[in-house]
Image 1: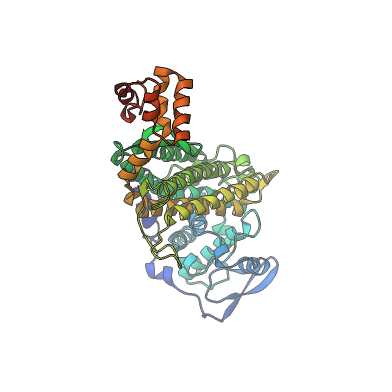
Image 2 (image 1 turned 90 degrees about the vertical axis):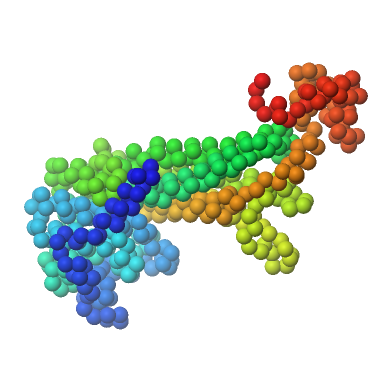
Length: 499
């Protein structure tokens, strides 16, 4: 897995290193004019003024005017735009095999590199928000316009002229928004799962495994229904957390084959009209080479356009991981409650002051942060479910909603896992003195007497000890059990597994 991840990072760096033989300085040329100045661009609806220092055109500007919703936090996520760059690059290179002029293909491919690197996103050339057309058409055209104008710059042309590189005829050749946007969804989610979430969850899982090994000999009282139960080791308790995240990683692995299926080649409704035979497979192969991930052409383009089931499946996995992390973080903060009046079995790292009025107070802030972001992921699950269910006839029209929530959940879980591991789990310590005290006071050790005197008599001993505020041993001896028998039968070390 580490080899694959390193390969992914290397591939992403290499994507924009070579500009298909064009001079690197050409990739950095700016447009005429500057801030406060405009140029005129036009689409099928007419002319619009566009900021002179931006590479987008009339359709992007029209979307900005039609959907002034939210602020910069509502922008289409950068991974989607980078994925658009990857697929446009692949299409330009493959289209050369189908008659696209070589110079145009090379210029488009080079222009895509600054999209893939995130450079043009950070410079504000992709201003559109999530809340636009449900097919993502305006973001597809935003990408086409930016790449077209960037390529025109490189070839010495005039911004907005659509010559010698046209946003539709060249950049969008053999494509439509209906197959490019779902393809960008799958590329971005596939890369984020592999590059971000899997390493982060693995790191946290390994940290929990390390604590499980460290705590393997510490016997403590178990709890069910928040009430005292039979003993286990602190290591066994942490092994459960470790297995939860191991299962989570396996669930990610299990959903990836559907993520790797790409809609490109389906165009408007899934029939492939306006593409050429072999185009879909060649583009998927090129995308796979660019990303070092096993992307393939979707076997059924009608499903690939009309449904977002793969993303609903992915977010189901993310939701399950959030459920696991919520349980783990809650357990750790409850076990660390105190320091004097709570359970106090764990000592959590003290990272910052906890109160503006109570001096010396320290709170389990990492646990609180983790549980809050898990709650957000669970909320995102509802949005993705509703979005996925709204595939009407040949097209799902909730795609920006779906992908933005999936990517946000990935980012939250990944960053949260790394933070929780480094600032909490790795610094956990066991409070052995407190653990021993609580365990030895527990009445549920009486369970060990069941095979020897029966459930009813053992229950009577426990109830009597609780009522009289005495120990199990005191009440057991009153029933005729000898001290030697009690010592032999009620031994926490012998209660940790089957006989």
